[in-house]
Length: 396
Image (tube, rainbow, N blue to C red; front, side, top):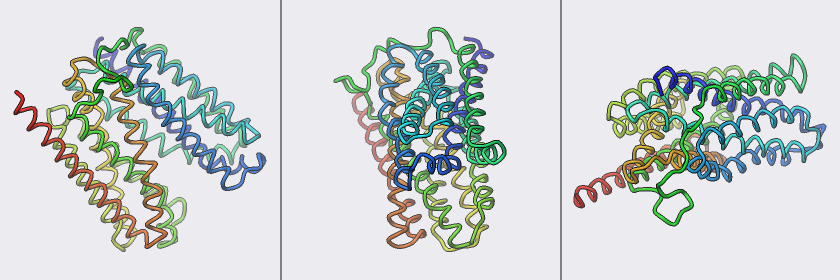
């Protein structure tokens, strides 16, 4: 594959990531207004939201297994098509069963597109370019997460409840067309190494620290998203616009840092880049836990974005490297699914853990707790990495 062909595929993957996060975000301001005609109260709305994560978590390993055996193209296209249809149907769902069904389909489609997207980047880019590729694709992720809720709310207010979903479905159709035109006809498949569900050893020791890193990233992000907006409103009487602008700082820092981090990690510095991002993430969480002015919280959110950018641009390429080095064969589906599962597990645990501590004590204590847990994960990952390297040296 030529460099220009790789760039076209990278653009299609990044655009699909953008659409997926956009679809996820537009539901946030619109679903409460769709819930009332459907007869849903707080619990019902919570169940609809949870269905997305449940379907995503359950179907992620299935997507990885299929990719390693049949290639990423068919899984990627199937996920994008289902996402388009489910998004279109969501805008017209008028019953609890309809809303739940559409949300489950969206979660399953997201599992397919995210795993296949990362797997595609691993397949078509050589090791020394994967960090940059993941960093560039992550721009779409960050922009979709930032714009989704705002665009969903604006479209709803301007044109009614169907408009956000019609617009998102139209963009999803463009993503399907871009993927169909750019993805290689024979991308991956028939992996010769052990898979996620085989009886053989699927994850080498060198992969463990990177999986722990994915868990830590999800933990921190889930905790901050669940608790910081509430604290900003309670402490500073921050408006919705102020909260949105503060989190926009995180997005900008993430985009900038991920580009530099990807390039540095491709230069053979994956571990140092990850360590720097991990420490930055821990410092950001600790600063959030110090009673302070809004300006200090803004600085903490910039640090949060920088730490997340450095880690996310490094983890997936490093995990793929570790698994290839151990098995000698590409298993992009397994690597991408493992990363997504670790990240998802972190986000699932982060929100409730931080919320529990915030209710029990305060947001400051919750932020400090997540900072300690995140940095402890970093220490454990470093110890595992050192032990694996020592064993490899002694066996050589």
